[in-house]
Image 1 (spheres, rainbow, N blue to C red):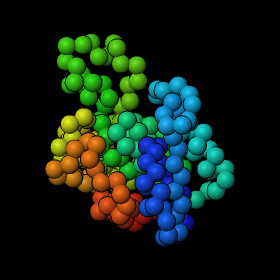
Image 2 (cartoon, helix red, strand yellow):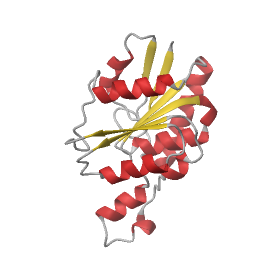
Image 3 (spheres, helix red, strand yellow):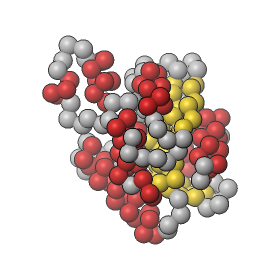
Image 4 (cartoon, helix red, strand yellow):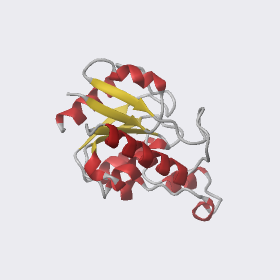
Length: 193
């Protein structure tokens, strides 16, 4: 089976995961990050993601799987909600349930609801998507918090798999293929396609 992957959180090391097995990997940088020009923020991220999906679908109708890591989980979930018929699966690595909750936890004394410009809500987005979802939680996540990923899992109505990586922090997940979590993710999503 030849599968197209769209990675909304770019990590060049994941290219190797697409080698062989009839799969190709496409990595897209967000506007304002890496070498890609443009403004940072939800509006620009979603516009770039929608354009990438359109380009992929126009070039080749094969199934698309999204992977969103950390803030990229917001973009991946929003795209899954906007284009449920075009996506075969979703992988969320160290995701948050609602970005505002994470910000409020970190800055309890600030009126985060008034100050936060980009209010990604992964729970609301996943309620509008039915593609299978894998949620990868870092057990010692010091940035988002493991409870946020578990909350995404508990509230997700689609077929889902929770992978908890014990003793791992937000930025210390093994992203080198063939990491066991990556293989589990691929097996789960491909079985459901």
